[in-house]
Image 1 (cartoon, rainbow, N blue to C red):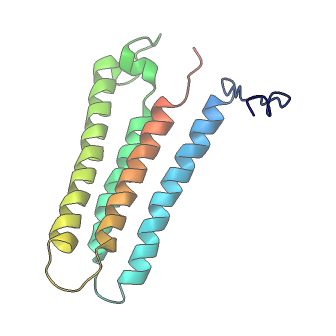
Image 2: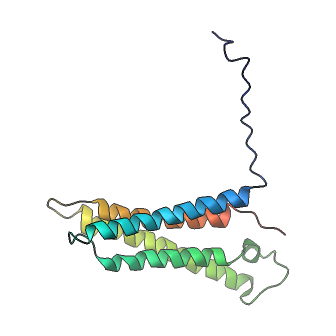
Image 3: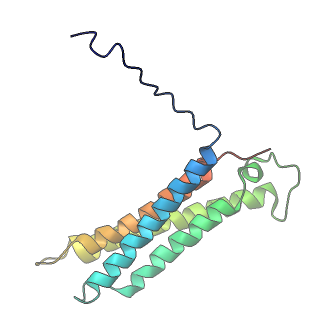
Length: 156
């Protein structure tokens, strides 16, 4: 029984070196779309029952703005390897990335606080899913930001 699969050749060497940027971009786009799809679906379904506040969109918008802020600066500017300084320079680029990550983590913390204060810790018979959906929305946007920023390689 030890040699029953010896004649089969399984080529599992998957080399995505040349397609790394494509895979990272597609993965990031799918994560971003899935996060917003969960938000829109939850807002459409639970707003009829009164279990959803449309002011929660502010957290998702801040997370999306933070995603664009993170990906607006090249890694070369942050590390100081760029040939030209640009408008902000290296210190300005690092400050920009810092502010972007502060916004990202703030939106994650805000979604966790809303999830627990408005849905998990409330007594009575109600659904907890809207709070989980808000957290998933923000967390998937954050993951999309990280995949798009650090999953790609930059030409030098």
